[in-house]
Length: 59
Image 1 (cartoon, helix red, strand yellow):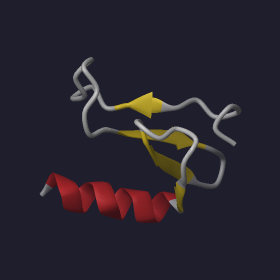
Image 2: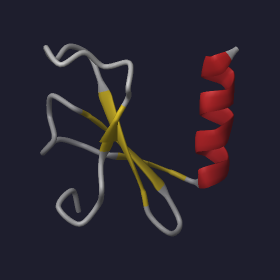
Image 3: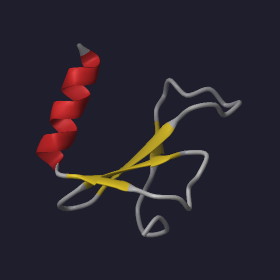
Image 4: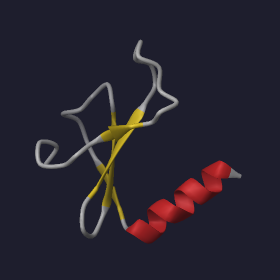
């Protein structure tokens, strides 16, 4: 899956690595993974769930 998606890292992420997540959107889901373990598990969320999560985190 990870090779067919366009993954994006936060602009807040430093170039030295660290704790970062990457996000990719498909037609029906938002995919989230650990940038340090790109071959690891991926969290798949419905767009409404992603919007609720990011809204909560922004508060």
